[in-house]
Image 1 (cartoon, rainbow, N blue to C red):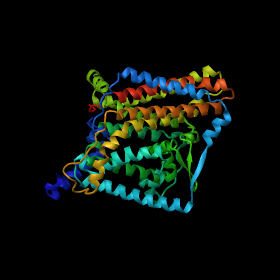
Image 2: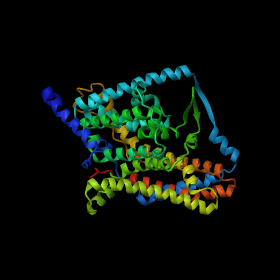
Image 3: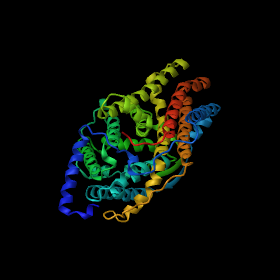
Image 4: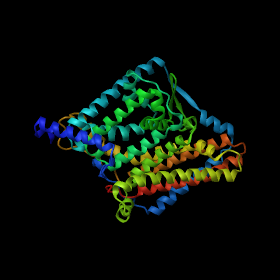
Length: 462
């Protein structure tokens, strides 16, 4: 334990590690055993049924759900389902005071994470900072954004800090779109996979410091709203996930609404916004893929250094997902003979993919969250002197079915959103149904890819 060595010696070692962590973010990281699963949760086992049967069943279920959705052709009914909501809380004062309390909580959590990650015990399962970020925040809190609603604008400690700092308020370059957020999202996942950011608390503290510096500098130059709307990847992830949730906020009212009904409000206006949606879908898939035996086999036979193979695979997979969706839009245009452009079809149908991304995130992280939640709770009682052993929960064999069900539910919701979108775009019923054929084919491809990853045993990333 770190407590057994002298404070000055420990402090020097951790400061050096912290500086090294900051530096490593800006250079090519050496691949390490470092994504979320390396915290010690029980590895995923292969499913008992044959993989081909899992894929066939999942693909057939998605196809059948499309057939059922295609039976709903009454536009007034579709509009009623999409616009349904019921106000639950209508008090601006309560919401404003609640937002202030949550903002203060976000600042406290950030301070605790930085302090404990850099100065606390350096064993992954004994460090509250590490467990808070990966178990409490990236797994648990992220699930709350699409299962309940997005509270990140209030909780976000960097947004809170930016509001009390001065701003130069330069105009954000429109030509950049949200490409900075898209590139940053891919970069953050790359750092998560290839660096020890999920194993070494002091390295994690270094990454957070870099992110803090970049974020506050961006808000200083462009202003809080412009930065978090266009350039910050985390804020955009939570905003997009929040559109899937059954709860939404309209000014001073919190309402219960049809899940996914808010996705139509974020129809991407530019190619960069479409790319961000696809990137959000791809990165969770990539995070799961690098923990499969198939990826290890690829690493063994491809004569490319790991330091280059990881980013190449990340970019290539993103390009494949993006090309598949654009190909579906071109096919949809040919099938329907519409005068609507391919770019417009891509922008209109892209938000439906966010339901798929949410379903796969839930499948990927639910077991991980439940397994490590006792460790987080135990370490939180004594963050600087945690017990020598922490408890991990082991999910029963049938729990893999929950993950597969989450993937299918996400795809079912995506199909409904795409169905409603088609009837909003096309005047004819047959044309609206036919327009969805290529997109359903792509969704089946996404479904089978996700189910295939979930059906594989989880192994350590090379």
